[in-house]
Length: 447
Image (cartoon, rainbow, N blue to C red; front, side, top):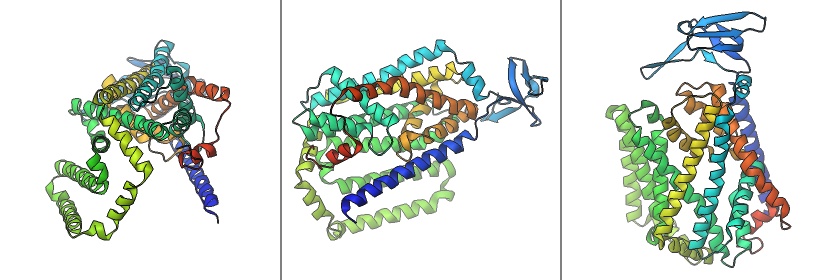
């Protein structure tokens, strides 16, 4: 079979697999959604129907058989979590959640969501300017919306970053720098997300609920720090195999240290000894010339002679010579993510979900990190599952948490992604997914 056909078939299989995963996750998650309101007594008895009175001391529900059940708060189920008790016997159905939406909170949420692509476009223009690529503000905004449109509505492996890179590369002579800057923009955004999440975890570390996500946040922050070092150090880039080995060892050491603190030395001691033994073997292997025997040095020399690698290295070097712009881009990432957090907080309040704001400061960055893992189409199913997992830990019902995820996805997708589809329709040079992928892999010489 020709190489091109094998590549197409592999992409099709990956697309099918991601669609299957998305559908499976959505079905699994939606099984927890309640259509009707429910009152649950302390003995587990459930009454379903429509809530007509919701406290504070008395709860009344109309049942489908035209009956009416009245229960005091003391008769309803309460859940214990970390020494605190909260009412968990009042469960709103998805119909009630949507019916009672508060526009006074929903409209500000839409405005905050509008800041997300705006700040992202300004950050992208700043990074392009560092590389000497001048694009009009309006053009950068168009490309940002087009990228959002591809991320939210177009199936396939062609994401918004690839589409932005395709268009930017067509409009400048610095094609390699333009393409790499698109992905630098994404990296800076992820670094900002990691730093923000880690800072919120540190501030709220006394709350036991945050310790669940702390390991994920610190691991992500470690990867972000590695990215920063690689971006700003030519020496580390030219010895990337050693850098990655050291980073893997450091990350595993942090995880093991965390497990020792959490579970005690007796429980984890064997894992620590195994880890130290593996590190010692790798070190001995490197000292005895193992890297040379595996021909990694020869591979590194071949890469060093590649024009693309040299231009990529130069792009990173130019960025490292502009620390002021780099810091400004990082702060713009903070503002971008904070706008997202405030927007989701307002959406939650519009749906009647009353959770303290500091939980959103910790949960949302972690949710965004996990949902960005490309195992499903646009994070469908993954995002809903982690919304349910994290917000469920603070007393939010599965129906409310999943509905919040859906409302956020619909609000951002419809209002702030559809303009990208309009901009795309206006363009005469609309690329197909095949055109973009061929251009990004050098099929037509664009990059």
